[in-house]
Figure 1 (cartoon, helix red, strand yellow):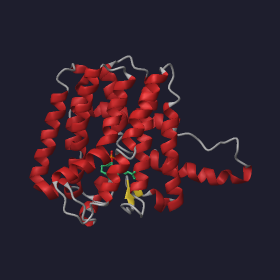
Figure 2 (cartoon, helix red, strand yellow):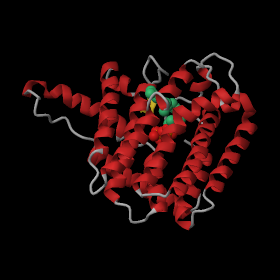
Figure 3 (spheres, helix red, strand yellow):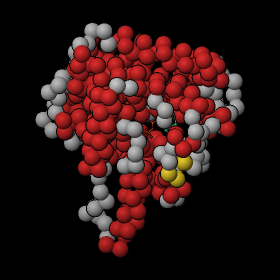
Length: 306
Ligand code: GRG
């Protein structure tokens, strides 16, 4: 990774971290009786524990980089809100994914998972609250036509819901201990991980008033990096270690989950990641050098170590 992209990544992560702290919401409510506010304070703690705790912030970065590639004049504060909305959905999905009824994981971002640090009910509710806060945030954009706001809400909810991430999670849970083919595996990942990554890119482009052609190019790019992200995740599950990953290494194998290396072999999976990176670059040929951070991001996704 070149030094200037390293600095760019760091800057985008700090920007997303401070926006998340600003927009996380709080537990003050006109309906709260004084003797109940400590319950809500605990929920708030669980939300902050899971949201503001060192994620890589790839999805916010994608919102920023796409918005900037399309129109460098895009409002920073609206881009921050869009980026936070996507990251809140991502944080909720990780909390719920780690629950005993799902992957039953103990470690996330190097810390006990939310249900271990708090309790299962609090973790479920923290995920629920993050999900609704994400949508609320999209109603708070400034100087943004309501048509655009509605389009953003539609993109995010469609990607996160039944026809996207939730559907993918369900198919994934049912794939444990099953022999599945590559098409089946790609369906899982297109929905479970890819849909939200595509939504992040489409939302950045929509906020920046992209033309239909630009939207299409960005979508083809995001589709490729979304799958590449998952291929690399599967490779890391084999090649990395728990300390570097911040989550349990070998968890996929332990759960007997189908993965790219299991279907293609480790070398085959690495070739697949390279092909997807090339597809992502090809999708951007019509965009000038203001899309260079997107090109670098694609390369980072297939070389990341955690
Ligand atoms: C519970 C509805 C519901 C959905 C869960 C996203 C997801 C669906 C499950 C996560 C399972 C998982 C670990 C998938 C691998 C790809 C992935 C999303 C990894 C985590 O994303 P990163 O690497 O995480 O961007 P950080 O911690 O950097 O934010």
